[in-house]
Length: 86
Image (cartoon, rainbow, N blue to C red; front, side, top):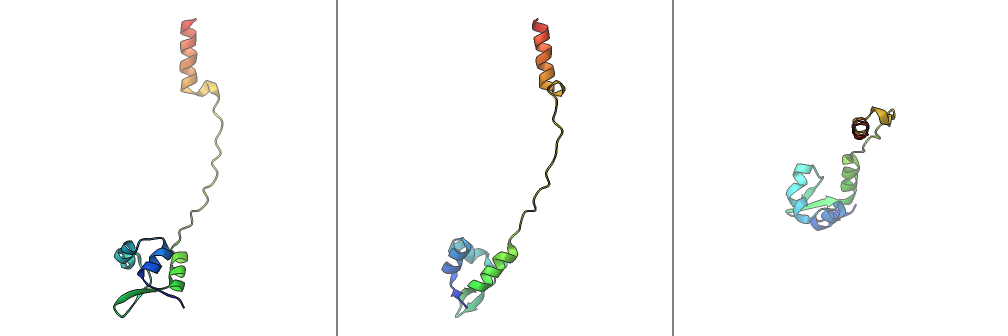
């Protein structure tokens, strides 16, 4: 078991020590106190990170029907301008 202090745990989590000190309770980071100091175990942090990860589900592919050029408003406006110029 590897015991980490606040600086080591913050580095492990990619946070600043101040951010971890201010947010560890709110975020539910597993910790304990030893001699009045906040301590963490690397194993518990690793499990917490893995449990807290949110994997984005793969979005289903949306198949769209191609729009014909004559169907778009821009094409209709362009055709109208061209016919009025002629």
